[in-house]
Length: 277
Image (cartoon, rainbow, N blue to C red; front, side, top):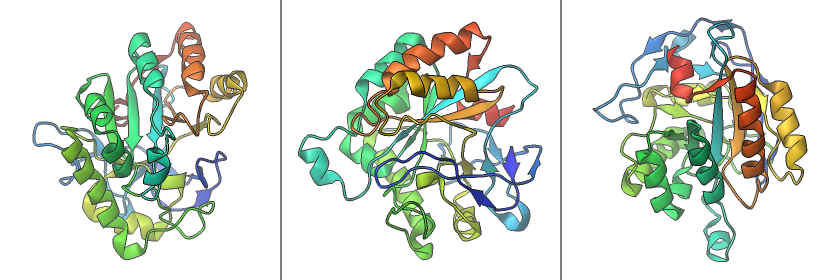
């Protein structure tokens, strides 16, 4: 639904120095607006939400609760601007096994990717961007926070927020992603009115979630699976991660959760389908 006023609340879940805060405010029915001109290709017009009051970037947390049992699995491909040395030393910020599992299970999904991740793994970014099972969306270039109090993450200054998002789209294009979606997920899930205003010219819809998987740094796949299964409702957006080093159980969680949710009558969709419905 669209969040038209800005009031942050905490969600729970940490990735890297931090990962999660969500927002919830009074909601209104979604409206379809133009896609971000800087984010989408000329060949497609994915659904977005109309700007909020004052032209603020709209925020989407979940789809309709009464239009069928749909659920969107989303995966954050996190890598911060300063983690290149760690990747060079052998740390894995990707998770090919997870992507293979999604393909084997034929699960459509939305991957929120940082520009730095796309630079580190251009072949994987291109493969995801060209596979119709997936859609690639923006998770910033740097994975630095857009507020000053986001679980210890370094911060992006207000005058650099738009540039950071645009830089990510540039990285996607250079990696060969043909049509990154006009959807943006704030690093750590943290945002405020200033951040929403700064991104208005980009034309993105900010995408949060209503189900926290708890997969970040988790070692108990069963507990994470249980948390997802207990939280999912029709129209839910589930946040998980596509980083082996920081979320090592996610592939096992997906292999458990997907058959169970299908048995309950749920259909997996991309975020774009939830927004468009």
